[in-house]
Amino acid sequence: MTQVFEDIIVDAEFAALIPPLSSEERQQLEENIVEHGGARDPLVVWASKGTMTLLDGHNRYDICTRLGLPFDIHELRFKRRDQAEDWIDRNQLGRRNLDARQMSLLRGRIYNRTKPKQGGTGANQHQQSGQNVRSALSAAELAAEHGVDEKTIRRDGKFAEAVEALGIERQIVSGEIDAPKHEIVAAASDLPDEPTADDIQRQLDVIYSHRNKPHVANNSGDNEWYTPKEYIEAARQVLGHIDLDPASNPVANDVVRAATYYTAEDSGLDKDWQGTVWMNPPYESGLIGQFVEKLCDSYASGTVTNAVLLVNNATETRWFQSLADQASAICFPRGRVRFWAPGKKQATPLQGQAVIYLGDDTEAFVSQFSSFGFCMEAAT
Image 1 (cartoon, rainbow, N blue to C red):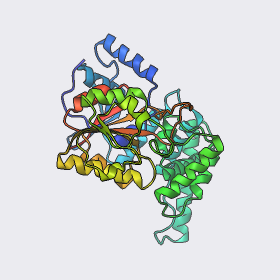
Image 2 (tube, rainbow, N blue to C red):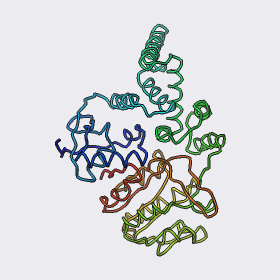
Image 3 (tube, helix red, strand yellow):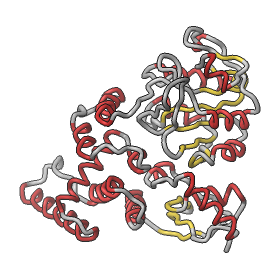
Protein backbone atom coordinates (compact mmCIF):
# COMPACT_ATOMS: atom_id res chain seq x y z
CA MET A 1 0.00 0.00 0.00
CA THR A 2 1.41 3.40 -1.00
CA GLN A 3 0.72 6.71 0.70
CA VAL A 4 -0.48 9.32 -1.79
CA PHE A 5 1.29 12.66 -1.34
CA GLU A 6 -0.37 14.60 -4.15
CA ASP A 7 -3.07 17.07 -3.21
CA ILE A 8 -6.55 15.66 -3.58
CA ILE A 9 -9.38 18.14 -4.08
CA VAL A 10 -12.49 17.52 -1.97
CA ASP A 11 -15.42 19.00 -3.90
CA ALA A 12 -18.33 19.82 -1.57
CA GLU A 13 -20.91 19.37 -4.35
CA PHE A 14 -19.56 15.91 -5.21
CA ALA A 15 -19.51 14.98 -1.52
CA ALA A 16 -23.14 16.08 -1.16
CA LEU A 17 -24.19 13.52 -3.80
CA ILE A 18 -23.14 10.62 -1.59
CA PRO A 19 -25.27 9.23 1.29
CA PRO A 20 -23.42 9.82 4.58
CA LEU A 21 -22.47 7.00 6.93
CA SER A 22 -24.18 6.68 10.27
CA SER A 23 -22.00 7.32 13.32
CA GLU A 24 -21.88 3.57 13.94
CA GLU A 25 -20.85 2.84 10.33
CA ARG A 26 -18.14 5.48 10.40
CA GLN A 27 -16.78 4.18 13.71
CA GLN A 28 -16.66 0.65 12.30
CA LEU A 29 -14.91 1.92 9.15
CA GLU A 30 -12.30 3.73 11.22
CA GLU A 31 -11.66 0.63 13.34
CA ASN A 32 -11.24 -1.46 10.17
CA ILE A 33 -8.81 1.06 8.65
CA VAL A 34 -6.74 1.21 11.84
CA GLU A 35 -6.66 -2.59 12.12
CA HIS A 36 -5.65 -2.92 8.46
CA GLY A 37 -3.02 -0.19 8.75
CA GLY A 38 -4.64 1.94 6.07
CA ALA A 39 -7.53 1.98 3.62
CA ARG A 40 -8.18 -1.45 2.15
CA ASP A 41 -10.01 -0.11 -0.92
CA PRO A 42 -8.49 2.62 -3.12
CA LEU A 43 -9.96 6.10 -3.29
CA VAL A 44 -11.47 6.96 -6.67
CA VAL A 45 -10.43 10.31 -8.14
CA TRP A 46 -11.17 12.27 -11.30
CA ALA A 47 -7.78 13.01 -12.85
CA SER A 48 -7.90 16.07 -15.09
CA LYS A 49 -5.32 18.69 -16.09
CA GLY A 50 -2.93 17.83 -13.31
CA THR A 51 -5.57 17.77 -10.55
CA MET A 52 -7.26 14.93 -8.70
CA THR A 53 -10.79 15.43 -7.41
CA LEU A 54 -12.23 12.88 -4.99
CA LEU A 55 -15.23 10.94 -6.33
CA ASP A 56 -15.51 8.03 -3.90
CA GLY A 57 -13.95 7.32 -0.52
CA HIS A 58 -14.56 10.60 1.31
CA ASN A 59 -14.76 8.94 4.72
CA ARG A 60 -11.67 6.82 4.06
CA TYR A 61 -9.76 9.91 2.92
CA ASP A 62 -10.82 11.89 5.99
CA ILE A 63 -9.90 9.09 8.39
CA CYS A 64 -6.56 8.28 6.74
CA THR A 65 -5.39 11.89 6.49
CA ARG A 66 -6.44 12.60 10.06
CA LEU A 67 -4.63 9.51 11.42
CA GLY A 68 -1.69 9.63 9.01
CA LEU A 69 -2.51 6.24 7.48
CA PRO A 70 -1.79 5.21 3.87
CA PHE A 71 -4.21 4.79 0.99
CA ASP A 72 -4.09 4.02 -2.71
CA ILE A 73 -5.96 5.80 -5.49
CA HIS A 74 -7.70 4.73 -8.67
CA GLU A 75 -7.81 7.39 -11.39
CA LEU A 76 -10.74 7.96 -13.73
CA ARG A 77 -10.77 10.42 -16.62
CA PHE A 78 -13.77 12.41 -17.81
CA LYS A 79 -14.09 15.33 -20.19
CA ARG A 80 -16.89 17.09 -18.31
CA ARG A 81 -18.10 17.58 -14.77
CA ASP A 82 -21.52 16.06 -15.47
CA GLN A 83 -19.81 12.82 -16.53
CA ALA A 84 -18.08 12.67 -13.15
CA GLU A 85 -21.41 13.31 -11.40
CA ASP A 86 -22.99 10.57 -13.48
CA TRP A 87 -20.27 8.13 -12.36
CA ILE A 88 -20.89 9.02 -8.70
CA ASP A 89 -24.63 8.38 -9.04
CA ARG A 90 -24.17 5.10 -10.91
CA ASN A 91 -21.61 3.95 -8.36
CA GLN A 92 -24.06 4.68 -5.54
CA LEU A 93 -26.85 2.82 -7.33
CA GLY A 94 -24.69 -0.28 -7.20
CA ARG A 95 -24.87 -0.30 -3.42
CA ARG A 96 -27.57 -2.04 -1.41
CA ASN A 97 -28.25 0.31 1.50
CA LEU A 98 -30.39 2.84 -0.40
CA ASP A 99 -34.05 3.49 0.26
CA ALA A 100 -36.65 4.02 -2.48
CA ARG A 101 -36.37 7.82 -2.47
CA GLN A 102 -32.58 7.72 -2.72
CA MET A 103 -32.71 5.30 -5.64
CA SER A 104 -35.36 7.39 -7.37
CA LEU A 105 -33.25 10.54 -6.96
CA LEU A 106 -30.14 8.86 -8.36
CA ARG A 107 -31.97 7.42 -11.38
CA GLY A 108 -33.70 10.75 -11.95
CA ARG A 109 -30.46 12.71 -11.90
CA ILE A 110 -28.88 10.33 -14.40
CA TYR A 111 -31.94 10.56 -16.65
CA ASN A 112 -32.07 14.36 -16.49
CA ARG A 113 -28.40 14.63 -17.46
CA THR A 114 -28.74 12.35 -20.47
CA LYS A 115 -32.11 13.33 -21.92
CA PRO A 116 -32.04 16.01 -24.66
CA LYS A 117 -33.29 19.48 -23.79
CA GLN A 118 -36.67 20.30 -25.28
CA GLY A 119 -37.42 23.43 -27.34
CA GLY A 120 -35.96 26.89 -27.03
CA THR A 121 -33.61 26.55 -30.04
CA GLY A 122 -35.86 27.27 -33.00
CA ALA A 123 -35.76 23.62 -34.06
CA ASN A 124 -38.28 22.57 -36.65
CA GLN A 125 -40.94 19.95 -36.01
CA HIS A 126 -38.86 17.16 -37.47
CA GLN A 127 -35.90 18.01 -35.23
CA GLN A 128 -38.16 18.27 -32.19
CA SER A 129 -39.64 14.88 -32.97
CA GLY A 130 -36.14 13.45 -33.19
CA GLN A 131 -35.36 14.85 -29.78
CA ASN A 132 -38.44 13.14 -28.33
CA VAL A 133 -37.35 9.81 -29.82
CA ARG A 134 -33.89 10.13 -28.27
CA SER A 135 -35.43 11.03 -24.91
CA ALA A 136 -37.69 7.98 -25.06
CA LEU A 137 -34.73 5.77 -25.87
CA SER A 138 -32.79 7.19 -22.95
CA ALA A 139 -35.68 6.40 -20.58
CA ALA A 140 -36.05 2.91 -22.04
CA GLU A 141 -32.36 2.12 -21.72
CA LEU A 142 -32.18 3.37 -18.15
CA ALA A 143 -35.35 1.47 -17.27
CA ALA A 144 -33.91 -1.76 -18.63
CA GLU A 145 -30.63 -1.18 -16.81
CA HIS A 146 -32.34 -0.83 -13.43
CA GLY A 147 -35.26 -3.21 -13.82
CA VAL A 148 -38.08 -0.64 -13.80
CA ASP A 149 -40.43 0.69 -16.47
CA GLU A 150 -40.05 3.87 -18.50
CA LYS A 151 -42.80 5.70 -16.60
CA THR A 152 -40.86 5.15 -13.39
CA ILE A 153 -37.74 6.69 -14.94
CA ARG A 154 -39.69 9.74 -16.10
CA ARG A 155 -41.25 10.12 -12.65
CA ASP A 156 -37.74 9.82 -11.20
CA GLY A 157 -36.68 12.68 -13.46
CA LYS A 158 -39.48 14.91 -12.19
CA PHE A 159 -38.65 13.98 -8.60
CA ALA A 160 -34.98 14.86 -9.11
CA GLU A 161 -35.96 18.20 -10.64
CA ALA A 162 -38.21 18.94 -7.65
CA VAL A 163 -35.51 18.02 -5.16
CA GLU A 164 -33.05 20.33 -6.94
CA ALA A 165 -35.59 23.18 -7.10
CA LEU A 166 -36.24 22.92 -3.35
CA GLY A 167 -32.55 22.57 -2.52
CA ILE A 168 -33.01 19.40 -0.46
CA GLU A 169 -30.56 17.06 -2.20
CA ARG A 170 -28.51 16.52 0.96
CA GLN A 171 -31.60 15.74 3.05
CA ILE A 172 -32.85 13.15 0.56
CA VAL A 173 -29.41 11.59 0.10
CA SER A 174 -28.92 11.34 3.87
CA GLY A 175 -32.39 9.85 4.38
CA GLU A 176 -33.49 12.71 6.61
CA ILE A 177 -36.66 13.55 4.66
CA ASP A 178 -39.39 10.91 4.60
CA ALA A 179 -42.12 12.92 2.83
CA PRO A 180 -43.70 11.05 -0.11
CA LYS A 181 -42.23 11.86 -3.50
CA HIS A 182 -45.53 13.20 -4.82
CA GLU A 183 -45.65 15.79 -2.01
CA ILE A 184 -42.15 16.98 -2.90
CA VAL A 185 -43.00 17.20 -6.60
CA ALA A 186 -46.22 19.08 -5.82
CA ALA A 187 -44.40 21.53 -3.56
CA ALA A 188 -41.82 22.28 -6.25
CA SER A 189 -44.49 22.70 -8.95
CA ASP A 190 -46.07 25.51 -6.91
CA LEU A 191 -42.87 27.57 -6.92
CA PRO A 192 -42.80 30.70 -9.11
CA ASP A 193 -40.47 30.80 -12.12
CA GLU A 194 -37.81 32.68 -10.16
CA PRO A 195 -38.38 31.62 -6.54
CA THR A 196 -36.89 33.47 -3.61
CA ALA A 197 -35.55 31.79 -0.48
CA ASP A 198 -38.83 32.68 1.24
CA ASP A 199 -40.84 31.03 -1.57
CA ILE A 200 -38.85 27.83 -1.12
CA GLN A 201 -39.15 27.95 2.66
CA ARG A 202 -42.95 28.25 2.43
CA GLN A 203 -43.12 25.12 0.29
CA LEU A 204 -40.86 23.24 2.69
CA ASP A 205 -43.13 24.30 5.53
CA VAL A 206 -46.06 22.80 3.60
CA ILE A 207 -44.21 19.49 3.24
CA TYR A 208 -43.36 19.30 6.91
CA SER A 209 -46.75 20.46 8.13
CA HIS A 210 -48.16 17.33 6.48
CA ARG A 211 -45.59 15.14 8.18
CA ASN A 212 -45.83 16.75 11.65
CA LYS A 213 -42.14 17.59 11.67
CA PRO A 214 -40.84 20.19 14.13
CA HIS A 215 -39.28 23.27 12.62
CA VAL A 216 -36.68 25.44 14.28
CA ALA A 217 -36.92 28.84 12.62
CA ASN A 218 -34.86 30.64 15.23
CA ASN A 219 -32.56 28.80 17.62
CA SER A 220 -32.24 31.71 20.00
CA GLY A 221 -34.92 34.24 20.76
CA ASP A 222 -38.63 33.53 20.47
CA ASN A 223 -38.48 29.76 19.94
CA GLU A 224 -35.84 29.18 22.64
CA TRP A 225 -34.01 26.25 21.07
CA TYR A 226 -30.37 25.68 22.00
CA THR A 227 -27.29 23.92 20.61
CA PRO A 228 -26.50 20.41 21.94
CA LYS A 229 -23.73 20.35 24.54
CA GLU A 230 -21.39 18.15 22.50
CA TYR A 231 -21.12 20.80 19.76
CA ILE A 232 -20.40 23.50 22.34
CA GLU A 233 -17.68 21.42 23.98
CA ALA A 234 -16.04 20.70 20.62
CA ALA A 235 -16.06 24.42 19.84
CA ARG A 236 -14.52 25.17 23.25
CA GLN A 237 -11.69 22.72 22.54
CA VAL A 238 -10.97 24.53 19.26
CA LEU A 239 -11.25 28.06 20.66
CA GLY A 240 -9.66 27.36 24.05
CA HIS A 241 -12.32 29.49 25.72
CA ILE A 242 -15.40 31.42 24.58
CA ASP A 243 -15.23 35.17 25.07
CA LEU A 244 -18.56 36.00 23.44
CA ASP A 245 -21.88 34.47 22.39
CA PRO A 246 -23.74 37.32 20.65
CA ALA A 247 -27.07 35.47 20.26
CA SER A 248 -27.94 33.78 23.54
CA ASN A 249 -29.77 33.96 26.87
CA PRO A 250 -29.07 32.85 30.47
CA VAL A 251 -30.34 29.29 29.95
CA ALA A 252 -28.22 28.72 26.84
CA ASN A 253 -25.18 30.26 28.50
CA ASP A 254 -25.30 27.66 31.28
CA VAL A 255 -23.92 25.32 28.60
CA VAL A 256 -21.94 27.78 26.45
CA ARG A 257 -20.27 29.47 29.46
CA ALA A 258 -19.26 32.52 27.44
CA ALA A 259 -17.57 35.31 29.36
CA THR A 260 -20.00 37.74 27.70
CA TYR A 261 -23.30 37.02 26.01
CA TYR A 262 -26.00 39.16 24.45
CA THR A 263 -29.72 38.41 24.52
CA ALA A 264 -32.44 39.55 22.15
CA GLU A 265 -33.12 42.41 24.55
CA ASP A 266 -29.43 43.44 24.54
CA SER A 267 -29.38 43.73 20.72
CA GLY A 268 -26.00 42.15 20.14
CA LEU A 269 -25.86 43.61 16.63
CA ASP A 270 -25.31 47.03 18.22
CA LYS A 271 -22.41 45.87 20.44
CA ASP A 272 -18.69 45.46 19.75
CA TRP A 273 -17.63 41.84 19.24
CA GLN A 274 -14.18 40.86 20.46
CA GLY A 275 -12.04 37.80 21.13
CA THR A 276 -13.18 34.23 20.53
CA VAL A 277 -16.79 33.81 19.46
CA TRP A 278 -19.29 30.98 19.52
CA MET A 279 -22.47 31.77 17.61
CA ASN A 280 -25.68 29.96 16.77
CA PRO A 281 -27.45 32.95 15.19
CA PRO A 282 -31.20 33.47 14.90
CA TYR A 283 -32.40 31.48 11.88
CA GLU A 284 -35.12 34.02 11.15
CA SER A 285 -34.97 35.32 7.58
CA GLY A 286 -33.33 38.74 7.61
CA LEU A 287 -31.68 38.40 11.02
CA ILE A 288 -29.26 35.61 10.17
CA GLY A 289 -27.70 37.67 7.38
CA GLN A 290 -27.12 40.58 9.76
CA PHE A 291 -25.44 38.38 12.38
CA VAL A 292 -23.22 36.73 9.77
CA GLU A 293 -22.25 40.10 8.27
CA LYS A 294 -21.37 41.42 11.74
CA LEU A 295 -19.17 38.40 12.45
CA CYS A 296 -17.41 38.58 9.08
CA ASP A 297 -16.70 42.29 9.53
CA SER A 298 -15.44 41.77 13.09
CA TYR A 299 -13.16 38.92 12.00
CA ALA A 300 -11.82 40.87 9.02
CA SER A 301 -11.02 43.84 11.27
CA GLY A 302 -9.23 41.61 13.78
CA THR A 303 -11.46 42.33 16.78
CA VAL A 304 -12.73 38.74 16.59
CA THR A 305 -9.72 36.42 16.56
CA ASN A 306 -11.40 33.02 16.14
CA ALA A 307 -15.00 31.90 15.75
CA VAL A 308 -17.10 28.77 15.44
CA LEU A 309 -20.70 29.10 14.34
CA LEU A 310 -23.58 26.76 13.59
CA VAL A 311 -25.92 27.67 10.73
CA ASN A 312 -28.23 26.05 8.19
CA ASN A 313 -26.28 24.78 5.19
CA ALA A 314 -28.07 27.29 2.94
CA THR A 315 -25.24 27.34 0.43
CA GLU A 316 -27.33 29.25 -2.14
CA THR A 317 -27.73 32.34 0.05
CA ARG A 318 -25.57 35.44 -0.06
CA TRP A 319 -24.83 35.29 3.66
CA PHE A 320 -23.56 31.70 3.43
CA GLN A 321 -21.37 32.54 0.44
CA SER A 322 -19.92 35.55 2.29
CA LEU A 323 -19.23 33.35 5.28
CA ALA A 324 -17.64 30.63 3.16
CA ASP A 325 -15.31 33.21 1.59
CA GLN A 326 -13.75 33.87 5.00
CA ALA A 327 -14.07 30.34 6.41
CA SER A 328 -10.97 28.33 7.28
CA ALA A 329 -12.84 25.02 7.54
CA ILE A 330 -16.39 23.67 7.39
CA CYS A 331 -18.08 20.61 8.89
CA PHE A 332 -21.28 19.17 7.41
CA PRO A 333 -22.84 17.07 10.20
CA ARG A 334 -24.34 13.67 9.47
CA GLY A 335 -28.08 14.17 9.92
CA ARG A 336 -29.67 17.32 11.24
CA VAL A 337 -28.70 18.79 14.60
CA ARG A 338 -31.25 18.07 17.33
CA PHE A 339 -31.72 21.29 19.28
CA TRP A 340 -33.02 21.31 22.85
CA ALA A 341 -34.94 23.48 25.27
CA PRO A 342 -35.86 22.98 28.96
CA GLY A 343 -39.04 20.95 29.37
CA LYS A 344 -39.44 20.36 25.61
CA LYS A 345 -38.76 17.52 23.26
CA GLN A 346 -35.79 17.87 20.94
CA ALA A 347 -36.51 19.82 17.75
CA THR A 348 -35.03 19.22 14.33
CA PRO A 349 -34.92 21.97 11.66
CA LEU A 350 -36.03 21.48 8.08
CA GLN A 351 -32.58 21.25 6.57
CA GLY A 352 -29.08 20.16 7.40
CA GLN A 353 -26.56 22.33 9.17
CA ALA A 354 -22.97 23.47 8.74
CA VAL A 355 -20.41 24.27 11.42
CA ILE A 356 -18.04 26.94 10.15
CA TYR A 357 -14.66 27.90 11.55
CA LEU A 358 -12.91 31.26 11.20
CA GLY A 359 -9.36 31.03 12.50
CA ASP A 360 -5.85 29.65 12.06
CA ASP A 361 -6.04 26.23 13.75
CA THR A 362 -7.90 24.22 11.12
CA GLU A 363 -6.20 21.04 12.32
CA ALA A 364 -7.83 21.41 15.74
CA PHE A 365 -11.22 22.12 14.17
CA VAL A 366 -11.12 19.08 11.90
CA SER A 367 -9.89 16.91 14.78
CA GLN A 368 -12.76 17.99 17.03
CA PHE A 369 -15.61 18.06 14.52
CA SER A 370 -14.83 15.11 12.22
CA SER A 371 -16.76 12.86 14.61
CA PHE A 372 -19.93 14.82 13.75
CA GLY A 373 -19.61 14.55 9.98
CA PHE A 374 -17.59 15.39 6.89
CA CYS A 375 -15.03 18.17 7.42
CA MET A 376 -13.08 20.09 4.82
CA GLU A 377 -10.58 22.91 4.84
CA ALA A 378 -11.73 25.91 2.81
CA ALA A 379 -9.69 27.15 -0.13
CA THR A 380 -7.63 30.26 0.59
